[in-house]
Image (cartoon, rainbow over all chains, first blue to last red; front, side, top):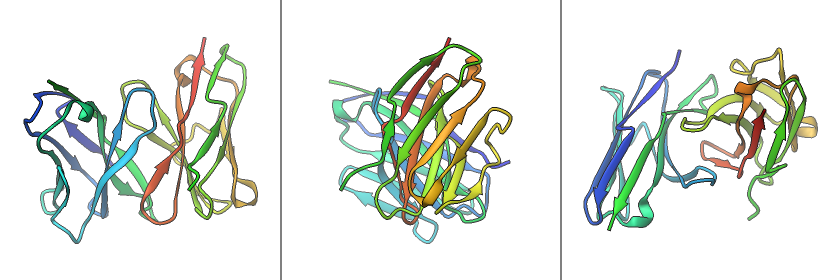
Length: 113
Length: 111
């Protein structure tokens, strides 16, 4: 079945460093790739997304890249801050309508000051 | 804009008991989802509704889980009888297009 693999499972960086989280997906029909940030005890919140007709998207300190041929997509956070500490999930669209999401297992990012 | 509302927020039940969770999606969102998030894992889709019809329930354990979305707005998710492994956060979400918005979740502990 469809699958999304996410690496690394944990990531520790110093404040100001960059952080990169990578995902691979299996369903070649997937065409929408969002990233969610989840703080402890809170709901997953969408931070950035990319569609299959775009290779890269930026929003301030956050960027996402997509390689459809290799079925890879990555989240890049620059100039990390302590408030970036959270669990980050990648996801890929699945299903006949392409409107449901399958999630990776998450990356726990810790930013130390 | 009001978000996705869920209740109850927390529930503790004994195994073999039943529980029901309620969700009110963002106004105007035709698509509603129930996801199960076990501690330390990503959300897993249980069921997807488009208006009041089921789009995908392939991951729903139908021997114990049921869900409905009468009138195409609110939805309920029921578990009967509950097992220990059902302990998780049950996230309701809704969408208008691809963008999915999650509620705060209903935390279930089965003891």
